[in-house]
Length: 159
Length: 388
Figure 1: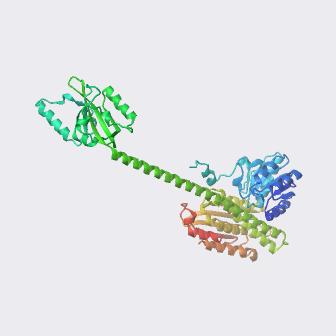
Figure 2: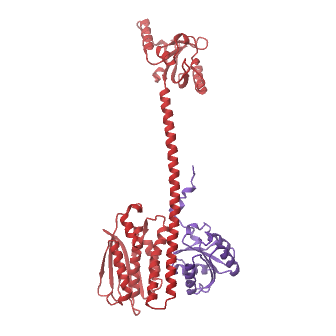
Figure 3: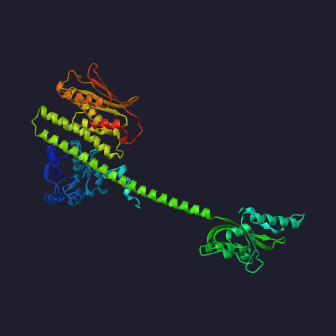
């Protein structure tokens, strides 16, 4: 697990069961939980207090779809790398709000491990290995293509 | 009556023969014509009317005496288009023929659309002697045009309205689809986390393995849902893309030097409704082979293939392990009956081959035509998907 162990990770997730299981998974992978936040305010506060290595950020939190804003604020701290973790990646803006990528929910252990290796490699200034999974998409690949969404029928002229 | 042959009438038309008889004949013909006609004399002051036929009197409601010596502009009124009047004036100035439609007025003040062809008439020496004009009442045509325009406007308005409605409906549908997609995936995540949490708190052994196995099955279903909604077309499912990811998951925990796993999967587009049961079945068979065919560090290979065949989809999972009968019966038990159930649900046929060593499973699943269609019109497929 070259360099992808012992990272301090902030989990931003409003679903208690998912958050708890994710903690167990991350600890199994050899990482340390810096904190768990369920709302944007908690996430920003914990980010400020702990300056984690990585923040895994869900988009839908207790106070609404505020994860994008959380990612923007957390990634202002150069010590923190942000990765989205969501079942709703259509909400991710084109600039990824400063995040390095997105883990798709429902996630697999392999996707989470792969994403953390990818982020660890970037943090170490190295070349990340090809991830080869639909479960994790780096920001460098851009936002999801969605035939339905990209039509943006509402963007046309409205009578 | 407005043809170009009328545009130039020569006053020197008279052929050799009895000129006065010819002139009389023409006058009679013109007088009796149902086409309203008028002749003016530009050599007199203000180009007055010098001759009209009865049809012209009928059209305009004037008596011959009213018109004699008057300029034709007495037919004009408030709705006569000045641009058309200018066009007539300009043609007269150039002594050129002109064809226009103008709103004119009868003696009683009622208006009518007058289509007129005005032609200069020259004598033998080419001098302008008369203007001749034939008229046609275009009021009905204009009324029709107006009605047609109104109908068109109304149709256009209705189309705009319907388009806006459809656009709103599509917008709503798209938003709803994303909401449902989000909920399905989030719920799968919760279920998966729930089972895994319980597995973590269960002592090592049969119960824990069972929970772990369930989490993996949920994982296989989750993979299908991740792919279904990310591809844009939510009614179709690409087996090859699924297989790529599925193989990564399958081989993640095994030593490639000991167990070689290969897959050959055609890029087959499948109805979304059969994706989940198919993924579950593939997961059972492949995991089973990888986990149980090679006990005690036995080396071997597992090959998976999915090909289109005449009747549908042919899947084959083959290993050169210890064979089904030799394997420990318990863990494979549920997996095998799960596979049999899913094959039955997909109206497929499963054949277990037990060659000298190892196991070969062949499954043929009937597929309907490749042509994409709305999910709602495929009740059979929808039914298949229910229990998946």
